[in-house]
Length: 292
Length: 290
Image: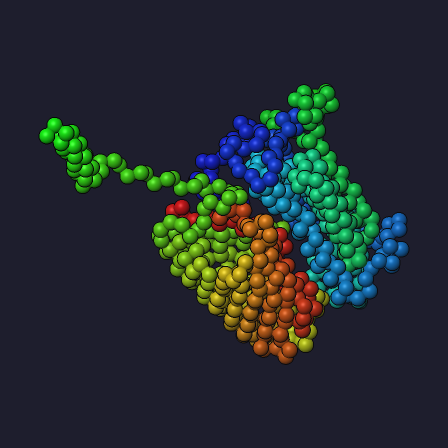
């Protein structure tokens, strides 16, 4: 659902392509912010990719996991579960709730804090705010699609479900819902590490907050992501291999997609000699184009 | 006689000038009145906060307020007369939908700059949660139990919400009475909007807080708040919540909000489901006739 804008605000907006640098006529409270002209903007092909990936994510959330289930831990999972799983049901529910709260803060930070508050309100550049938001949407959609499809295909049972009918009442949503088989890999871990990687990328490349605050934002974001992932094991919602896989994939996508956009900015006005990769529309679909 | 003529001439000139000036001031000015300056631009994000909802004339209007975050979307549509989001009388309608339930709210609202009064009704149907069997304490497993029928309710509400300037900030006070009906006989219900386990029919809620602007950033505020929620139909049905509400007002259209008010004391152990926690979200406002 899009946000309707008042007519006066729409009339004020300049096309992004015509105003790649600081928005004309804007007033900002902090130092001005500019989009390096050598950086790659989010193009139509990537917007299509975002939409398709979001559709896959939604579809994977609706489609139940495959009926062939995988049960039990792998590698060091059992030892880790015995060590870290909280003993009381109240403690496990509290761990789950806290992981939900941290995830919601992390997942919204690239949009509300980095794009809306820092880039647009504080630094006065609507165009940079838009690029931050689009990049973040692309990253989360792609990561979500990977995680959703894996969930459905692997169909691994969550660790708590081993107690269904005994220590966990059988007639509960936890035991009857198909979500019981969405353990691999952890969506909370994946999305929190993807969000932390986005925060880090935006802050370190754009110097959004200035001074030591950008590095601090990076450190805090990753600490929150690690806490979120750990709480999923403490709450017996995932095995350790689930959260490690989610963290690795979330970090790879969360750093990789912004890196495709923020590369080549030397500040000298000269094009970088490093190769570039872009997603462009091609007929009814999309194509990946590289230059070197 | 020769010396007196220049004096007489000078006096005549002075008198003529004076009469001319008086005549000029007596005649109406032919200059057009200076045109009113155009209104300041209405930016989506405006650090200068040049526009407010208190400006303009009272008028019929349609307005919308949309709250969005991870993962929720709560639109509200209002039809009224006055200055939207400031001083008006009218009706509110909003759908309620999330992963657990669906419903709607409809009611009448009367708003002044510092106080807001509303009366309405909210039907809710939960496709995830079930009616609850009465017991001294509800825990997470009981809340998720699937043995009972799907929960539904109809709540009638009256609420008064005040934001009164005091010192550098504002005192925030809220009082709400809810009458919850349409609950199957012999059961309790978890009311999604109230975020409390209800033994029908009454739920009473009061909140007090103080919103203090952040030094150097007057558009930002932090409000420590304290809630009491009482369900008279339950033994020891009093719950207490405390936390903070953070707001960043980026323009008259856009605000970033965080509500973190977890439960301190409750007869139940249902975690965040029993607190007022809406994470980090944005609020967008728009009205016709701007």
